[in-house]
Image 1 (cartoon, rainbow, N blue to C red):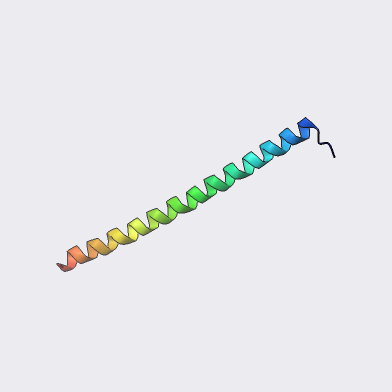
Image 2 (image 1 turned 30 degrees about the vertical axis):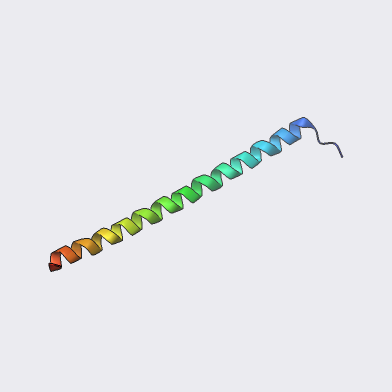
Length: 53
């Protein structure tokens, strides 16, 4: 069951591309979620400051 080096290299680069895309999409989800949570926290803090607590 020999696989030619060209096919093996092609499969390797496809795998690398898939892992890169997965990593970038995971980073984007985490980044956007963190921004949303930071915004929510700042709104809460500003509301508390406005209420005088």
